[in-house]
Image (cartoon, rainbow, N blue to C red; front, side, top):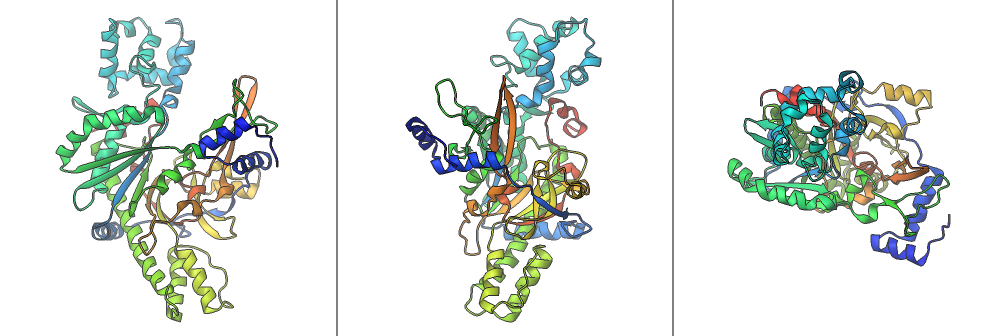
Length: 516
């Protein structure tokens, strides 16, 4: 498909690091769409797709982590881009339409009523009250007379507390007496507990938006020495931004590129799948991946820490077994016993379906088994389905024709196919973004993670911009399509390890309030 790119267009995309061929490929995706994922069955504990750890397993893998992680670089990788605007959606709707006490807040805005009734319970309450006081306003008076919009605007608006435009990482989530912690600080404390190396180094990497980087740097400068002193560690905190070359072009309903008032092409960020590029730059041996809003106070952290260590121990144990097999397969003439051991490990332990090998030569079989094992590896925690949105664990037939374990988002599934819908509804667990990754091969060299992305698993979304419908394209998601060709193991983890803050009122849940 040919599109007419002007010399100005070519300069613009070259500055982003995007080729004309990539633009044409994206336009073709808009026209043709992405193929739906072919679900074979939901991965469950019963069919072996999800591993349930016993108490003995947890002890064994925790000990394996302590033993096998020695001398290795450990990293915690936290996607933390974007402002917290969506967290306050109900409050924004309220302030745009609330005109005073003649309205029934409880009936028309139940979420806002809950927020206002418990406003003193939030960790940011003192900051809000003091912000109003500095402007000569008394919080109590405004609440008594029902001027709730003014109170909420002081919380959200830039120039005041600015919570609606700040990154979620820098909002105060939890209170410990007179001390409060942001979600960034909770990730630091959590990381200290399970991502510390032998010499007391704790490496944490946050992906951030360019406009927020100064705020992150300022916050880290404020708290770094305190946490280093309190826990006796050395914190190495780094940041990166989504690469411009991962942005995707925006088009109208006829798939024509949309231009701004200056006639320049319009681009949109490629979604969290773009962060595979940021992950690809990390040099650690073990990488924990967890979202910025999934943190809990100290009294709730124990379960998370235990399972993080157990998952990492399981990963290192499997990796050690895999590396031992790979070394034997890399020899000129591996024995039949070595080949059989590799086949059993792949099919029984890793749950990967093998094509028939009986008619293959030893060399062909060796190459097949070697290539299957010589991939990045990840352990993915899965929690029992509680109706939360997000991807789920499934056996799928992928674009290579292989049966494999994948995290699949609902948007990737053909909901009009009764059989596919039935498989979707049969899922018992979902993905809370709880990953432990190993991205080096058996020789200690980093994999090029781009090679293990399935480009056919992107998304197309539509949004209205006035009278115009804008179509945008997201890259394959970080924990699904971007890791589609990794070796994947699903492990059941307790619901206590998953406590995301998607709306401000989530901070009122007992998991974020009790015991602090």
